[in-house]
Length: 142
Image 1: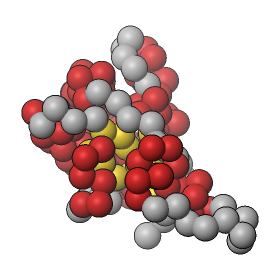
Image 2: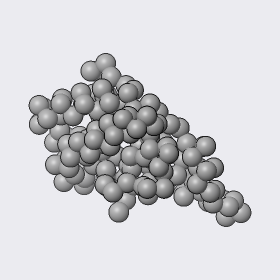
Image 3: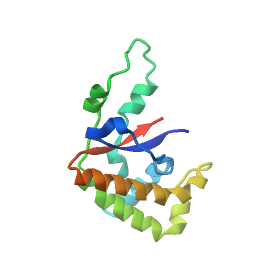
Image 4: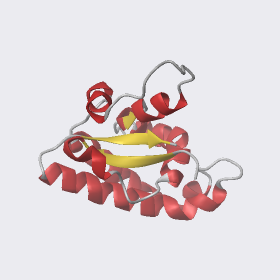
């Protein structure tokens, strides 16, 4: 598995995520301009790179931080800020299949079929986090 996105709830970070959102991760750079055109918050706004950066650190003397430190370092967002963007992006891509097919870089085109599924899963999880009154982020993991 390469780099992917997990949907994490601040109060339940240890639960991780059961879905590999690689298609969404690899499409973020091309989805952000679509968000701009639609007048939406950018998808990349909700990415948190804390876990990725810690895992990629080359400083061998640095101890791996415990879960609480990672939670404190991370950026967390209100689900209500992301849900309109996720829903509109999903609707837009479902009705623009030709654009959907061109969103992934060469070698990753096979993931375009999974992109709508990734968005559906993210919407479902972010909606659940909203009903729980918690914060979330899209955690970039390797």
